[in-house]
Length: 44
Image (cartoon, rainbow, N blue to C red; front, side):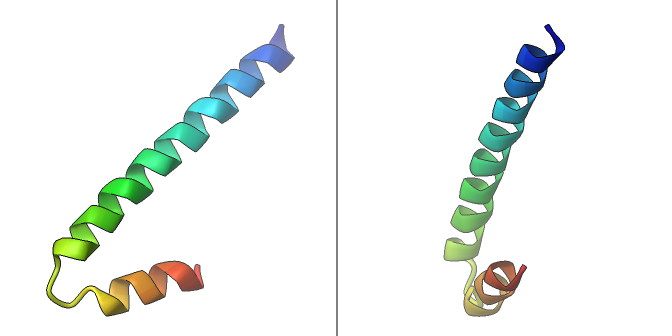
C-alpha cells in the first residue's frame, strides 16, 4: 500500500517537525538575545 506508507511518512515528518520546533523554541527561550531568532523564525 504505497498510499498508506506515504501517510505514515508524512506523519513522521510532522512529528519530527513538531519535536524540532519545540527544541529550537527551548534553546531560544534560554538564549539572552532570543527576540531576533524567534522573529526570524516567524518570518519563514
